[in-house]
Image (cartoon, rainbow, N blue to C red; front, side, top):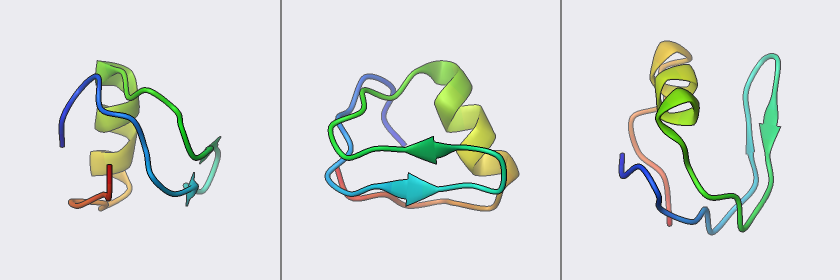
Length: 42
């Protein structure tokens, strides 16, 4: 996953939702990897 990428779709995790257009931070990437998300559309 690319830090600084802009999400093309809303992504829901167990404790958090990232809206379409959100710019990914290193912490966001870590949260998504912890939840098992390995691919996103950006």
